[in-house]
Length: 157
Image (cartoon, rainbow, N blue to C red):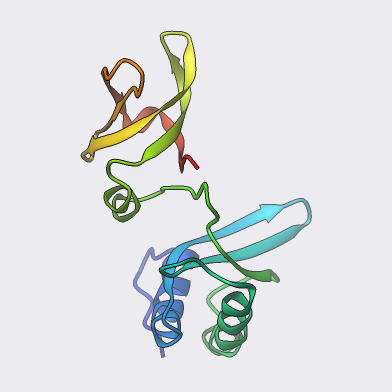
């Protein structure tokens, strides 16, 4: 039985359940999101592996995850489980993701504009808990953006 810590989110509990299953299938959990869209709720488990994820991988993970989710019942709502690939222009939502894609081109969307601009693109050069630095590919200028002002970061294909 998965032990739930006080204040632990649904996605954190699901990650504890999904991680060993993914490892057993030679996959990794890229991200987990629990969202409400219209009248429905969706538990989205994003999986990855070297060389990319196939539809067969998603199906195997979904089938393997179904019973443990029913057993542990970490979601107190009716929901639809979706297992999918993070995609080519995947969201980079944590330090593990950023570290994996250092020196790759990313797109950053801001909450509030910086210099009348809310979207930036460049090569990810560094990051820390407070900021992310990207290099403009044309001018080689380094731009540092505050993480608290960032709404999304995606890998640029």
